[in-house]
Length: 150
Image (cartoon, rainbow, N blue to C red; front, side, top):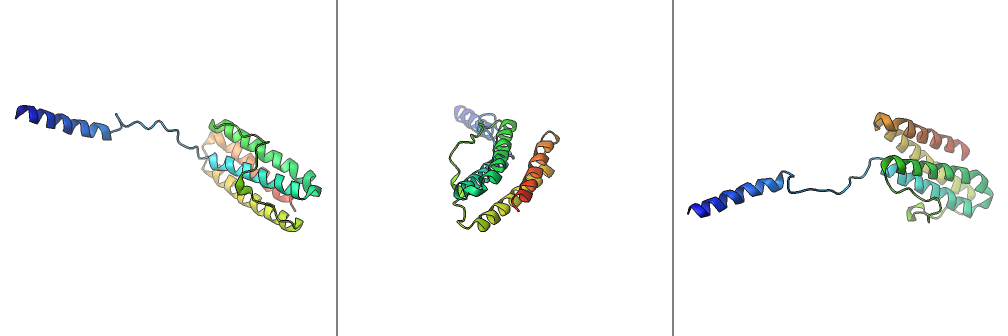
């Protein structure tokens, strides 16, 4: 009887230990809040490059904007400790095929840049002090891209 009581007591004590985190360790790294902004920079760059390929006469205008997004993605990767993206990687599937009409393609790029600017501004407002300058710079660059796409 005493033996059964001791086993029950040990079993009851072991149960709470597993729930308190002492024995349940989750070493999975948590995503950084800036990961979506990095991914968006890569999508924007891919969209610009795809449009430049579809409309070669726009390449001189769009390539510097794509390079800017790729530089931002690389810096965001550095800040968050993620693997640095490659500017020569295949465009993400979410970049899509640009419209064949040049005016429609520019309109789509402006909308993507506007959405990106808003996301960067929101991230900047919520960021800790050590990330504000980078995010403010990204938001400003995306706003200037809107002007370049007019």
